[in-house]
Amino acid sequence: MALKSTIHRIELSIADIDRGYYHDHPLTLARHPSETEERMMVRLLAFAMHADPALAFGAGLSDVEEPDLWLRDDTGAIDRWIEVGLPDERRLRRACGRAVRVVAISYGRNAALWWRQNQQALSRLERLAVIELPAKATLELAALARRTMRVQANASEGLWWIGTEDGSVSIEPSLRKEALT
Image 1 (cartoon, rainbow, N blue to C red):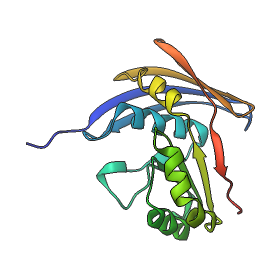
Image 2: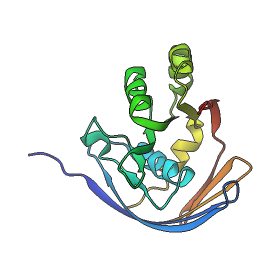
Image 3: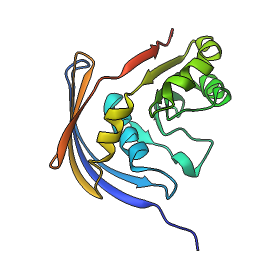
């Protein structure tokens, strides 16, 4: 018998001073049986970091042809493709051929190693931005995961503060590579 995804209902309030974005998003997040709470919460943080009324979660681990998040314009063209984790260089290259802008958000204890191994190849992808999250912070973020959550995400001067009724985490993403387009 196949395991089903776990559904998480989230009320996300974003106050992104850096972008001037202030909005509430009622979200339903499906966590694939093989997905960790850490990865799911990083996807939620990625949503907050790139929030837009049209930003949507992809099928994620259930469909290898879709990103973790994406933003499509009115014509259906992909404006932004967001990958979470340590994606394969070929996958990012293909994404750069399909989207105006691609963002890879790496996390975990192997993120720095992944960057060192892929830096040369990824540096040639003009549409790609690479962001690394501190491993300690993403583990703390995972500890906040609940099936039903009210989450406040605040950003100022590049620093993110994520709070729930169970606690809060401060996260300072590192920009490893900026997109040239």
